[in-house]
Image 1 (cartoon, rainbow, N blue to C red):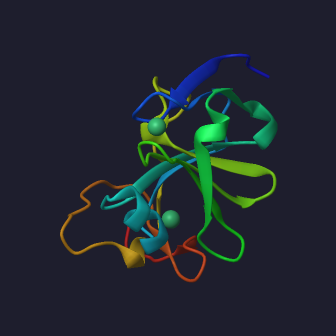
Image 2: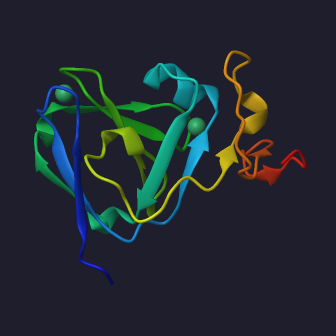
Length: 141
Ligand SMILES: [Zn+2]
Ligand SMILES: [Zn+2]
């Protein structure tokens, strides 16, 4: 396993963390539960197993919001930066925008593409998935 680390954190700097590469995946999520709290057209996520994530500072400034039965989102309560999302116990999603340096991959797919906004046009050729869990092929690559 690589021991390369990438640091990240929130806008105000109170919360800082690091992840250890390699990451598990990277992609754009168009679901409304991502878009709304991030204030964006879609959210680009990467992920690591939770044991490869570590707070460096400010964990006590984080708050969690349970956005679905399974999903919990973590943000800085001082500046509002959304940073983490956890749906499955062995996968910790990290907002790519919270990281301070490039990771070991680039975005590979669009998820929940059928929930996308009408005011942003996606023009890349990445695979596009949707359906109930956002990962079914839509056949519209
Ligand atoms: Zn902050
Ligand atoms: Zn989402």
